[in-house]
Image (cartoon, rainbow, N blue to C red; front, side, top):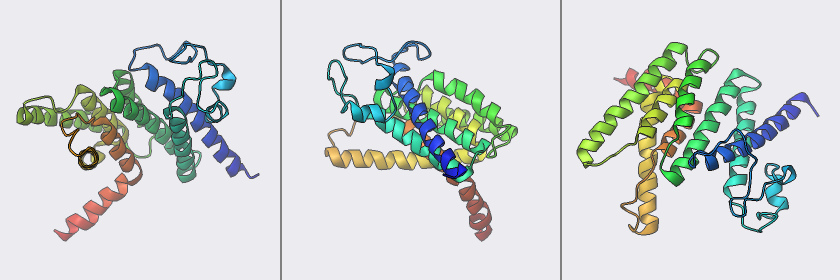
Length: 262
């Protein structure tokens, strides 16, 4: 087995184990529980989960998606988060190799995945993700090939300020809160990781994705859920991931091709 194959397997395995920790964050952060100490336990019977029942992906299959003690069903979210994280880590390694680019992409994705699941379920974006994320984005800008430290700083300010002003406008037009404070802090974090140039693409992409989701939800539910609140964080996160992979290409296309036509 060649070294690249070994590293690919390691990247997948590392992603699965990181995904297991992300599940802890998704479960505990909204409940304001300590995620640093304390063993995992079944939310139904509170039985501590033994290490051999907590192996990413495998334990879910071995236990047949049920708690060993009380037989309560284990949520599909746990293996899904582990598998998606493992696949992303493998994709990042395949694209960028053993590099700072891979490390930044993996950290960025992990934080966005936690934000997405929590915001979809609880309509909140924890400060314990966005505030450290801002600092981390600025710190990693010294090794992040996508941005310079100055780009990251401007991106943080531009992202947070732009969405704050948009929130004020939305509150005025709709006479109710249109964007939460968590969305504004998340936008600042995205700017710190991806720089100010990607902010416009992220906002536009998130708006389009959110609109598609809202229309689809209305069609499926036949307008029964038309007044239901839709979290914006997941769509900001998805647009940010698109910017992570395609942002530079799209910016170059706009600057060199679109503007050249004018």
